[in-house]
Length: 298
Image 1 (tube, rainbow, N blue to C red):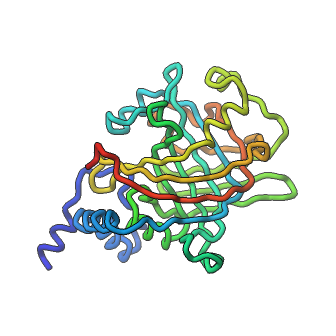
Image 2: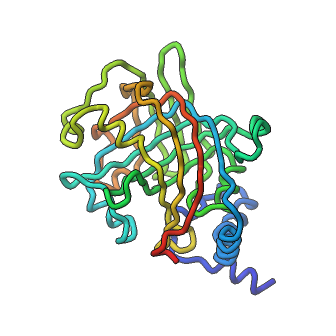
């Protein structure tokens, strides 16, 4: 028992994917140690290499994209040196996309998946360059249900999600707007109110990055792979493969009515009132096809 406790306490350098449990909840404080235990994670990785990946599916809706241009050198310091960030004119793109799942669960369940819960999720990510096309790397993943936070961390290296005790993401059909309020801690929190419009235009800042609104939206949405650093070994990375058939003609431009950007942006040299690019994907099918450890991580 003493040896097991010691191994469970064998933590590497803290990283942003370490589980952040509510301080007042003793049970989740203990779970945090279990979910970060290197022995448990290594055993799971060995097991997952021996069994087929169980595909996941969901129908997602009200997908709000909020993106900022940030200094690429500031972000490079934030990731392993092998991560090739997309850049242009010294800038890279940071995106928060927030959405509502509808019955997120295993594909093999078929019609029984309708009994699975429907969590809300917020993905915070950067984009990789042409050497890894259609690939993002997660800065953070936030969810509003412990079941999916625990399940993702126990079964995957690409879903080291954090539990957000405050998570509101609501569509107002009368005003054609979506209000979002998410809180984990001072870095990983924001709130916004965006209203869908017909004006598909880029601001002068974003016109320096893309020739048109359509080009910018396609770049931001058309992503098939997601990287995440391991919880116990941040120098190692796994890749998740996804499929999201998108009807680009359905994507709506959005006006930002109000926005309290995350404090995290200041670490990248960005002020909260910096020009943000917003749009909304009304709905799409979401498929998680597989997961693998990148060769350089073996």
